[in-house]
Length: 182
Length: 168
Image 1 (tube, rainbow over the protein chains, first blue to last red):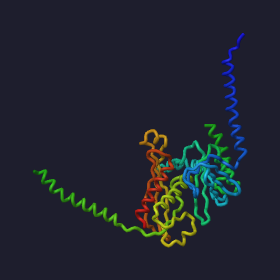
Image 2 (cartoon, rainbow over the protein chains, first blue to last red; image 1 turned 60 degrees about the vertical axis):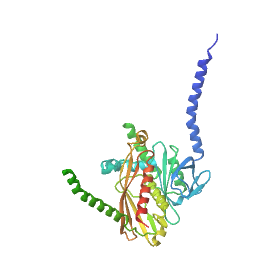
Image 3 (cartoon, chains in turn orange, purple; image 1 turned 180 degrees about the vertical axis):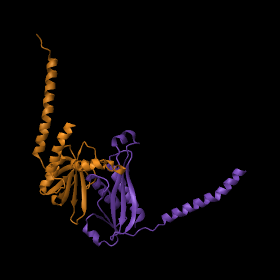
Image 4 (cartoon, chains in turn orange, cyan; image 1 turned 90 degrees about the vertical axis):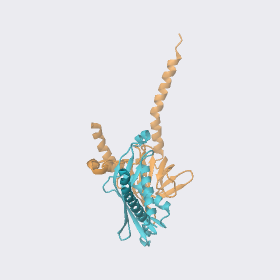
Protein backbone atom coordinates (compact mmCIF):
# COMPACT_ATOMS: atom_id res chain seq x y z
CA UNK A 1 0.00 0.00 0.00
CA UNK A 2 1.33 3.39 -1.02
CA UNK A 3 1.21 6.12 1.65
CA UNK A 4 0.42 9.61 0.25
CA UNK A 5 3.47 11.81 0.85
CA UNK A 6 1.92 15.25 0.38
CA UNK A 7 0.01 15.45 3.71
CA UNK A 8 3.10 14.23 5.58
CA UNK A 9 5.23 16.95 3.95
CA UNK A 10 2.62 19.58 4.86
CA UNK A 11 2.47 18.42 8.47
CA UNK A 12 6.26 18.38 8.75
CA UNK A 13 6.54 21.94 7.32
CA UNK A 14 3.87 23.22 9.71
CA UNK A 15 5.66 21.60 12.65
CA UNK A 16 8.99 23.15 11.64
CA UNK A 17 7.39 26.59 11.27
CA UNK A 18 5.77 26.32 14.70
CA UNK A 19 9.03 25.27 16.35
CA UNK A 20 10.87 28.06 14.53
CA UNK A 21 8.42 30.75 15.64
CA UNK A 22 8.70 29.54 19.24
CA UNK A 23 12.47 29.48 19.13
CA UNK A 24 12.88 32.96 17.58
CA UNK A 25 12.04 35.01 20.73
CA UNK A 26 14.34 32.80 22.80
CA UNK A 27 17.20 33.39 20.38
CA UNK A 28 16.53 37.15 20.40
CA UNK A 29 16.53 37.15 24.21
CA UNK A 30 19.84 35.32 24.23
CA UNK A 31 21.30 37.87 21.82
CA UNK A 32 20.14 40.75 24.04
CA UNK A 33 21.36 39.04 27.19
CA UNK A 34 24.79 38.63 25.66
CA UNK A 35 25.20 42.37 25.16
CA UNK A 36 23.29 44.30 27.79
CA UNK A 37 25.12 47.57 27.23
CA UNK A 38 24.88 47.85 23.46
CA UNK A 39 21.80 48.59 21.38
CA UNK A 40 22.12 48.24 17.66
CA UNK A 41 19.83 49.89 15.09
CA UNK A 42 19.24 52.89 17.34
CA UNK A 43 18.26 56.10 15.63
CA UNK A 44 19.58 59.41 16.91
CA UNK A 45 16.66 61.67 16.12
CA UNK A 46 18.38 64.88 17.14
CA UNK A 47 20.63 66.51 19.68
CA UNK A 48 24.02 64.80 19.62
CA UNK A 49 26.77 67.31 18.93
CA UNK A 50 28.48 66.71 15.60
CA UNK A 51 25.84 64.39 14.21
CA UNK A 52 23.10 65.06 11.70
CA UNK A 53 19.47 64.34 12.52
CA UNK A 54 18.01 60.86 12.03
CA UNK A 55 21.25 58.91 11.94
CA UNK A 56 21.15 55.19 12.67
CA UNK A 57 23.90 53.57 14.68
CA UNK A 58 24.69 51.67 17.85
CA UNK A 59 24.05 53.10 21.27
CA UNK A 60 26.36 51.78 23.94
CA UNK A 61 26.91 52.52 27.60
CA UNK A 62 30.51 51.63 28.40
CA UNK A 63 33.53 52.98 30.25
CA UNK A 64 31.52 55.61 32.09
CA UNK A 65 30.03 57.16 28.99
CA UNK A 66 27.35 56.98 26.35
CA UNK A 67 28.75 56.11 22.96
CA UNK A 68 26.86 56.44 19.74
CA UNK A 69 28.65 54.86 16.81
CA UNK A 70 27.69 55.22 13.18
CA UNK A 71 29.62 54.01 10.14
CA UNK A 72 31.58 57.25 9.97
CA UNK A 73 31.53 58.82 13.42
CA UNK A 74 31.56 58.09 17.10
CA UNK A 75 30.12 60.54 19.60
CA UNK A 76 30.86 60.17 23.29
CA UNK A 77 28.98 61.81 26.15
CA UNK A 78 30.31 61.27 29.69
CA UNK A 79 27.59 59.52 31.71
CA UNK A 80 28.32 61.77 34.68
CA UNK A 81 27.19 64.77 32.62
CA UNK A 82 23.82 63.17 31.84
CA UNK A 83 21.34 64.76 34.22
CA UNK A 84 18.18 63.09 32.97
CA UNK A 85 17.35 59.82 31.23
CA UNK A 86 13.71 59.16 30.45
CA UNK A 87 12.03 56.56 28.34
CA UNK A 88 8.76 57.13 26.54
CA UNK A 89 7.01 55.00 29.16
CA UNK A 90 8.38 57.15 31.99
CA UNK A 91 6.96 60.24 30.33
CA UNK A 92 3.58 58.63 29.76
CA UNK A 93 3.44 57.55 33.39
CA UNK A 94 4.35 60.94 34.79
CA UNK A 95 2.00 62.80 32.49
CA UNK A 96 -0.79 60.30 32.02
CA UNK A 97 -1.33 59.61 35.74
CA UNK A 98 -3.86 61.33 37.99
CA UNK A 99 -2.61 64.79 37.08
CA UNK A 100 -2.94 63.94 33.43
CA UNK A 101 -6.50 62.71 33.94
CA UNK A 102 -7.55 65.81 35.91
CA UNK A 103 -5.92 68.19 33.46
CA UNK A 104 -7.84 66.52 30.63
CA UNK A 105 -10.50 69.13 31.27
CA UNK A 106 -8.10 72.06 31.07
CA UNK A 107 -8.50 74.59 28.22
CA UNK A 108 -6.68 74.52 24.87
CA UNK A 109 -6.50 70.73 24.99
CA UNK A 110 -3.70 71.04 27.48
CA UNK A 111 -4.66 67.93 29.39
CA UNK A 112 -4.41 65.40 26.63
CA UNK A 113 -1.11 63.67 26.09
CA UNK A 114 0.75 64.78 23.00
CA UNK A 115 3.45 62.32 22.02
CA UNK A 116 6.30 63.10 19.67
CA UNK A 117 6.48 59.65 18.14
CA UNK A 118 4.33 56.68 17.29
CA UNK A 119 3.94 54.11 20.04
CA UNK A 120 5.38 51.21 18.04
CA UNK A 121 8.94 52.26 18.83
CA UNK A 122 10.73 52.92 22.09
CA UNK A 123 12.10 56.36 22.79
CA UNK A 124 14.89 57.50 25.04
CA UNK A 125 15.46 61.14 25.87
CA UNK A 126 18.58 62.36 27.61
CA UNK A 127 19.53 65.74 28.94
CA UNK A 128 23.23 66.43 29.42
CA UNK A 129 25.51 69.31 30.27
CA UNK A 130 28.60 70.35 28.31
CA UNK A 131 31.87 71.63 29.81
CA UNK A 132 30.65 75.24 29.94
CA UNK A 133 27.38 74.31 31.63
CA UNK A 134 25.16 74.49 28.55
CA UNK A 135 22.21 72.13 28.53
CA UNK A 136 21.83 69.73 25.60
CA UNK A 137 19.03 67.36 24.81
CA UNK A 138 19.19 64.25 22.67
CA UNK A 139 16.44 61.92 21.53
CA UNK A 140 16.83 58.34 20.38
CA UNK A 141 14.41 55.80 19.04
CA UNK A 142 15.15 52.15 19.72
CA UNK A 143 13.69 48.79 18.92
CA UNK A 144 10.53 48.04 20.90
CA UNK A 145 11.51 46.89 24.38
CA UNK A 146 15.10 48.21 24.30
CA UNK A 147 14.59 51.58 26.02
CA UNK A 148 14.38 50.32 29.65
CA UNK A 149 17.55 48.30 29.13
CA UNK A 150 19.36 51.27 27.64
CA UNK A 151 18.24 53.43 30.54
CA UNK A 152 19.47 50.89 33.08
CA UNK A 153 22.80 50.60 31.26
CA UNK A 154 23.26 54.38 31.32
CA UNK A 155 22.34 54.58 35.00
CA UNK A 156 24.91 51.88 35.76
CA UNK A 157 27.53 54.10 34.11
CA UNK A 158 26.68 57.07 36.33
CA UNK A 159 23.85 58.91 34.55
CA UNK A 160 21.04 60.37 36.66
CA UNK A 161 17.27 60.29 36.33
CA UNK A 162 14.23 61.73 38.06
CA UNK A 163 12.27 58.49 37.51
CA UNK A 164 14.25 55.59 38.99
CA UNK A 165 13.95 52.27 37.20
CA UNK A 166 12.71 50.37 40.30
CA UNK A 167 9.95 52.90 40.91
CA UNK A 168 8.97 52.74 37.28
CA UNK A 169 8.82 48.94 37.40
CA UNK A 170 6.73 49.04 40.59
CA UNK A 171 4.18 51.45 39.19
CA UNK A 172 3.99 49.35 36.06
CA UNK A 173 3.42 46.20 38.13
CA UNK A 174 0.70 47.97 40.12
CA UNK A 175 -0.95 49.24 37.00
CA UNK A 176 -1.03 45.87 35.25
CA UNK A 177 -3.64 44.09 37.45
CA UNK A 178 -5.96 47.11 37.19
CA UNK A 179 -5.68 47.00 33.45
CA UNK A 180 -6.46 43.31 33.54
CA UNK A 181 -9.53 43.93 35.69
CA UNK A 182 -10.87 46.36 33.14
CA UNK B 1 -26.19 109.00 -12.68
CA UNK B 2 -26.82 108.67 -8.95
CA UNK B 3 -24.68 105.61 -8.90
CA UNK B 4 -21.74 107.46 -10.46
CA UNK B 5 -22.08 110.23 -7.86
CA UNK B 6 -21.98 107.67 -5.10
CA UNK B 7 -18.77 106.19 -6.49
CA UNK B 8 -17.28 109.67 -6.73
CA UNK B 9 -17.99 110.28 -3.06
CA UNK B 10 -16.54 106.91 -2.04
CA UNK B 11 -13.36 107.28 -4.07
CA UNK B 12 -11.63 109.82 -1.79
CA UNK B 13 -12.49 107.68 1.21
CA UNK B 14 -11.01 104.58 -0.41
CA UNK B 15 -7.92 106.54 -1.36
CA UNK B 16 -7.54 107.80 2.20
CA UNK B 17 -7.81 104.29 3.63
CA UNK B 18 -5.31 102.87 1.18
CA UNK B 19 -2.88 105.68 1.98
CA UNK B 20 -3.18 105.25 5.74
CA UNK B 21 -2.71 101.52 5.28
CA UNK B 22 0.45 101.99 3.28
CA UNK B 23 1.77 104.51 5.80
CA UNK B 24 1.10 102.05 8.63
CA UNK B 25 2.86 99.25 6.80
CA UNK B 26 5.75 101.56 6.00
CA UNK B 27 5.96 102.38 9.71
CA UNK B 28 6.07 98.65 10.49
CA UNK B 29 8.85 98.17 7.97
CA UNK B 30 10.88 101.04 9.36
CA UNK B 31 10.49 99.81 12.92
CA UNK B 32 14.03 99.88 14.28
CA UNK B 33 15.66 96.54 14.93
CA UNK B 34 16.81 95.72 18.41
CA UNK B 35 20.57 95.57 18.72
CA UNK B 36 21.86 92.37 20.24
CA UNK B 37 25.09 90.54 19.54
CA UNK B 38 24.24 87.35 21.36
CA UNK B 39 21.25 85.35 22.47
CA UNK B 40 20.73 82.80 25.19
CA UNK B 41 17.99 80.26 24.59
CA UNK B 42 16.44 78.88 27.74
CA UNK B 43 14.91 75.42 27.96
CA UNK B 44 11.32 75.39 26.71
CA UNK B 45 8.89 75.41 29.62
CA UNK B 46 5.36 74.09 29.73
CA UNK B 47 3.68 75.39 32.88
CA UNK B 48 0.10 75.06 31.67
CA UNK B 49 0.54 72.03 29.47
CA UNK B 50 1.86 68.60 30.38
CA UNK B 51 4.40 68.15 27.63
CA UNK B 52 6.68 65.11 27.32
CA UNK B 53 10.38 65.76 27.80
CA UNK B 54 11.22 64.60 24.27
CA UNK B 55 8.89 67.24 22.88
CA UNK B 56 10.51 69.92 25.05
CA UNK B 57 13.98 68.82 24.01
CA UNK B 58 13.02 68.76 20.33
CA UNK B 59 11.65 72.31 20.57
CA UNK B 60 14.78 73.50 22.37
CA UNK B 61 17.30 71.82 20.07
CA UNK B 62 15.51 72.87 16.89
CA UNK B 63 15.27 76.41 18.21
CA UNK B 64 19.03 76.58 18.79
CA UNK B 65 19.80 75.12 15.38
CA UNK B 66 17.44 77.39 13.44
CA UNK B 67 18.53 80.57 15.23
CA UNK B 68 22.18 79.66 14.61
CA UNK B 69 21.38 79.25 10.92
CA UNK B 70 20.10 82.83 10.62
CA UNK B 71 23.51 84.28 11.63
CA UNK B 72 21.66 87.17 13.27
CA UNK B 73 23.68 86.78 16.45
CA UNK B 74 27.42 86.34 16.88
CA UNK B 75 26.86 83.84 19.70
CA UNK B 76 23.98 81.55 20.48
CA UNK B 77 24.25 80.35 24.06
CA UNK B 78 22.45 77.40 25.54
CA UNK B 79 20.56 77.39 28.80
CA UNK B 80 23.02 77.22 31.69
CA UNK B 81 26.05 78.32 29.67
CA UNK B 82 28.25 80.26 32.07
CA UNK B 83 29.89 82.24 29.25
CA UNK B 84 26.57 84.00 28.54
CA UNK B 85 26.81 86.11 31.70
CA UNK B 86 29.81 88.02 30.29
CA UNK B 87 28.25 88.63 26.85
CA UNK B 88 27.67 92.39 26.26
CA UNK B 89 24.33 92.73 24.37
CA UNK B 90 22.65 89.59 25.46
CA UNK B 91 19.02 88.79 24.72
CA UNK B 92 17.40 85.92 26.56
CA UNK B 93 14.66 83.91 24.91
CA UNK B 94 12.06 82.39 27.23
CA UNK B 95 9.60 80.00 25.58
CA UNK B 96 6.50 78.67 27.28
CA UNK B 97 4.11 76.20 25.68
CA UNK B 98 0.56 77.24 26.55
CA UNK B 99 -1.51 75.02 24.31
CA UNK B 100 -1.62 72.36 21.69
CA UNK B 101 -4.06 70.70 19.38
CA UNK B 102 -3.49 67.00 19.10
CA UNK B 103 -3.64 65.85 15.50
CA UNK B 104 -3.21 62.48 13.88
CA UNK B 105 -0.45 61.43 11.52
CA UNK B 106 -2.69 58.70 10.15
CA UNK B 107 -5.40 61.21 9.26
CA UNK B 108 -2.81 63.50 7.69
CA UNK B 109 -1.51 60.67 5.56
CA UNK B 110 -4.94 59.61 4.43
CA UNK B 111 -6.66 62.94 3.90
CA UNK B 112 -3.80 65.50 3.83
CA UNK B 113 -6.41 68.00 5.04
CA UNK B 114 -7.44 66.92 8.54
CA UNK B 115 -5.38 65.78 11.50
CA UNK B 116 -3.10 68.81 11.83
CA UNK B 117 -1.09 69.10 15.05
CA UNK B 118 -0.61 72.57 16.48
CA UNK B 119 1.65 73.69 19.26
CA UNK B 120 1.27 77.19 20.70
CA UNK B 121 4.25 78.81 22.35
CA UNK B 122 4.63 82.19 24.00
CA UNK B 123 8.08 83.60 23.21
CA UNK B 124 9.51 86.35 25.34
CA UNK B 125 12.78 88.11 24.57
CA UNK B 126 14.27 89.93 27.53
CA UNK B 127 17.55 91.59 28.35
CA UNK B 128 19.83 90.47 31.18
CA UNK B 129 17.90 92.54 33.72
CA UNK B 130 14.63 90.91 32.68
CA UNK B 131 13.21 93.87 30.78
CA UNK B 132 10.97 92.70 27.93
CA UNK B 133 12.34 93.53 24.50
CA UNK B 134 9.82 91.58 22.45
CA UNK B 135 6.93 89.23 23.13
CA UNK B 136 5.21 87.12 20.53
CA UNK B 137 3.04 84.03 20.29
CA UNK B 138 4.29 81.50 17.76
CA UNK B 139 2.41 78.44 16.52
CA UNK B 140 4.16 75.36 15.21
CA UNK B 141 2.09 73.28 12.81
CA UNK B 142 2.27 70.04 10.98
CA UNK B 143 -0.51 70.04 8.45
CA UNK B 144 0.07 67.65 5.60
CA UNK B 145 2.67 64.97 6.06
CA UNK B 146 5.06 63.98 8.79
CA UNK B 147 5.13 63.22 12.49
CA UNK B 148 4.70 65.61 15.38
CA UNK B 149 8.43 66.29 15.26
CA UNK B 150 7.77 68.49 12.25
CA UNK B 151 5.66 70.80 14.41
CA UNK B 152 8.70 71.48 16.58
CA UNK B 153 10.77 72.19 13.47
CA UNK B 154 8.09 74.52 12.10
CA UNK B 155 7.95 76.39 15.41
CA UNK B 156 11.73 76.82 15.45
CA UNK B 157 11.78 78.13 11.88
CA UNK B 158 9.10 80.69 12.70
CA UNK B 159 10.96 81.92 15.79
CA UNK B 160 14.12 82.19 13.70
CA UNK B 161 12.19 84.40 11.26
CA UNK B 162 10.98 86.56 14.17
CA UNK B 163 14.54 87.05 15.39
CA UNK B 164 15.71 87.91 11.88
CA UNK B 165 12.97 90.51 11.53
CA UNK B 166 13.46 92.12 14.92
CA UNK B 167 17.12 91.85 15.85
CA UNK B 168 20.39 92.93 14.31
